[in-house]
Length: 305
Ligand code: SF4
Ligand code: SF4
Image (cartoon, rainbow, N blue to C red; front, side, top):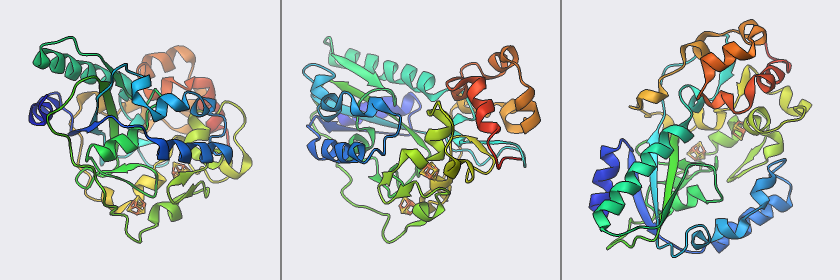
């Protein structure tokens, strides 16, 4: 398989960047993950401690795996929610990225199968399987892993979704891994984190607003509650602070157009919302994952308006 054909196909399907790395066993990353888990920084994300071997070795996810294709899809928009309405992370403005990207990855895999003329074994992943997406993206030449733990692409910044295809396809050449780190002496993301959850290259999920408002099912700890401000779904503080996002440009994915309800609903609108209306307005939105009940829990946390 040819790297140029892959790039052209990925562009046609609307991906903003694409690269490919040869399969490898990510022992260093696994060890770092285990140290993070040992500190309890994964909080209630028990799934992070499961399937560690599969995360380390892609051949345990796809038999005979030879390559890891990685795509980036920009989701940035300069548009912001109306002033004084409860705030969601930008990635949740439009349709759920899992749905949008999975469909595109399936089409890319179908193209590769057709090109190769054989029955390719492959699987598509979007943030829902034990895969070290950021490290694979770095190895596929798509950027470096910033102090905010996110992949930073020098052209696109960090407001990007990562999609991965692990397959048994071999390529005639592979992307050049990004060995440089353009964070330099910058620590803006660490300083901008409202709760102190972020230290360089490491997030303590127990304190992270994103984890607590989306994944955590119990009560939000007071230390987090007090620092949430108007956020009620996710947190972009460690991305907003990053100078590499200063030149981020508007995405070109129709499905990511902001949900107009989300842009203007105030706190009272949210608290008075019933399940049926929520379903109508936010079906296929990332907000449907935690559901209305949890959203109301987040909104009832002081010091929101
Ligand atoms: S998402 Fe927010 S709370 Fe979590 S590490 Fe980043 S800045 Fe801190
Ligand atoms: S804010 Fe600075 S340190 Fe953090 S990811 Fe961006 S460049 Fe790196």
